[in-house]
Image 1 (tube, rainbow, N blue to C red):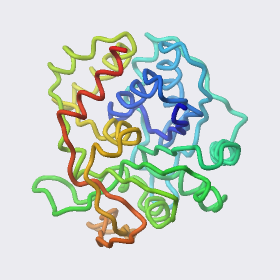
Image 2: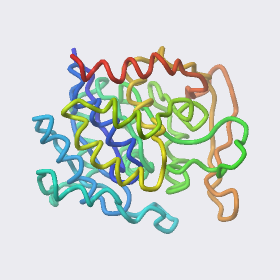
Image 3: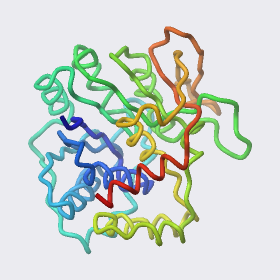
Image 4: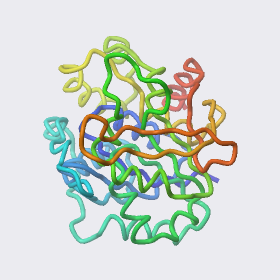
Length: 293
């Protein structure tokens, strides 16, 4: 049976969301139960997701979610890759559905079967768990891209971006008990990167054409892609891909230089499984072979 995925994304900022969505759409073992968008301009983000679904020839419910964080000011107000929309057919997002209620309905209708894959700021997921606390226990698993759990890396901000964009939401999500929560932070995702020229060479499948189009805007600001969200996505189907350590985490929510910093405590019976190691070569094999099927 295919894996049922509910994909919560801030597609349109960092290009890796689109890279992850392309893999989900190409994967015959994936049933996309829905896509919800989060962060500034969620309607534009929904249109970008729609454009990719159109290329894949798939009808997937796409619902706009929260534009603003729970308490802090907006830190990601714009979806920069919107400039590519004029070149790709897409549908307008639904304006009559609440993303949190949509997520709750999908999970309630498929108890024990849904993997909630959240790769943006955690605002939608936090609101889901606050409004429908029973939803956490009905998930098959929660798979996240967020946080930094190991030693500080010189030259990088202490807080990972998804957590920094909504630290209060991240705190809620990381402290919520589910049947299984897999967390992929910068400690593991920064181990899978690809330079721009190699991306242009290897992104040759039809479904990767809109991704490569969006990526050119990204490459105007960055020389490579770090496969943050794709690693979490591929690991949701291949949990042996990463080496996980169990424990618990908390997020610094007070204002100041450490806002969004993740604190980590290993524990054998901890509620989180946090990735620290990955077989990078196997990851890239698993990623690209889907487009050759």
